[in-house]
Image (cartoon, rainbow over all chains, first blue to last red; front, side, top):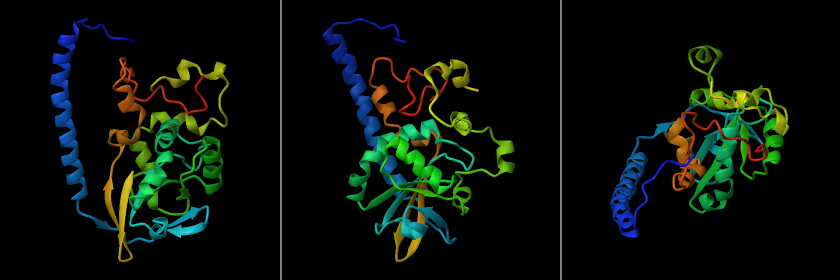
Length: 187
Length: 56
């Protein structure tokens, strides 16, 4: 819904825009500083050996780099019992799936990891029309160790992610008439 | 999301972020933030989002 707004002359707009621009530039420079601080974080060795199910067979974490020196892993919410991937996670992958060649050009590999079996991931990836590699952590502790999955004990203490709860029961796109606002309401 | 570096056969974890820390890959947000209505979500963060083949 549109907010109520002050209606002003072009000159008044320009003055207000100038003030906003000053703060936008502050924000940009602060972003640069945060990026630098992020890159200066200490590194933690990964000593455990993880084995992932991939389109090319079983691969270790080191092999997932695919010959590059940097690996970005998106923990996609697609649990073993889900019938489809999380809608919100899916909206995110829509945004970066087309960026992979550019990331590769900067020596960075990016992929998705989920706990669902590989066959489910492959089918959903085809439905979504994505290119990004997607590996299954079904047979490894990777997602638990990196905080992306919760054990049943942890789940008892945490609210389950509301966005993805409906993913577990839906098996195919709903008919328009089924998309009631009730089922979508934040719980 | 987690980031890793590999050098001399050793893998290191270098960064991890979650929740709103992931907004940098929610590309619709910075775009909507420049539209007149903004994100227009009320207090229902992301409750409007569907899979791209499920919008009515």
